Image 1: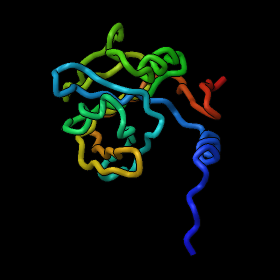
Image 2 (image 1 turned 90 degrees about the vertical axis):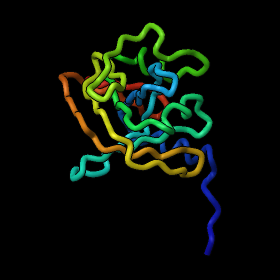
Image 3 (image 1 turned 30 degrees about the vertical axis):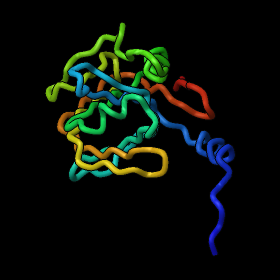
Length: 160
């Protein structure tokens, strides 16, 4: 028996009840400049090898920089970096303007103040619905003190 897909708005509301951390995925673009975007669709996949994935909307303007990239970065934001998350979520501007960053060992942009950073070698990309799923193998990983910026029920939250 084939059932119809869930209603888009109901699906969105149901998924918003899953609390997630907020990350900024970053890459050195084909133009030699840093590019990135706010991502909450991020997860670890495997410990051996150390794999992660994130999803990027197929309509995103920065997709053209992530598609050919051999390496990408994941910056797990601290709860005090809400403005960074909002900045990288806005469309229509250079998202690294006014943002401090450091090149990682692979050259990807890493954000100071993040509670964790990963540099990943891209191992697979595939379309799933209206998103591109990007899987990467972590080649560097660092964790720092702090509390994560959380997203739940369509809003930012902090751990007290």
